[in-house]
Amino acid sequence: MNIRLAKIGPVAGALFLGTALLSAPAHAQLRQIECAASGAGDISMSADYRERFRNNQLRRRKFSVEFEAAPRGQFNLGDRLAVIVAGVRVARPELRQDINGDLFFDVNFDTFARQNDATAFPPNFPTIGQRARVAIRKAGQLVLACMMR
Image (cartoon, rainbow, N blue to C red; front, side, top):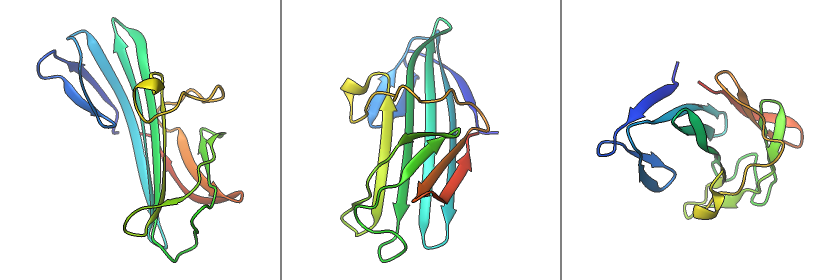
């Protein structure tokens, strides 16, 4: 299992969330689950879900999923893929191209979306936990999937 529940101290508790370096008081906790997959044609995906608690109250949620494909494969610049979390389509990002020619997308949801490059969680975002499936689909066909742990 790859779920982490950690006490975070005010000095030692700097953790990486996206590109932000944050610290939290000793009574804060972080729950994190993640997964990754790769497939034929040099494609890969990863997903990460985090919940921050303070005094046993949920204070912040973050979810991110990334997908990458080698150029000249089964994907094209501008293709729209579907991100399915626990059976619910939560995003339909468009493939972009990085400086090396790879095609990619990244989707970031955050309860504090105004503070970074993330957007607000969609209203239909499901409750997820261990064993929640995150899938990438193209034109209804499964491309890659992984199970949160």
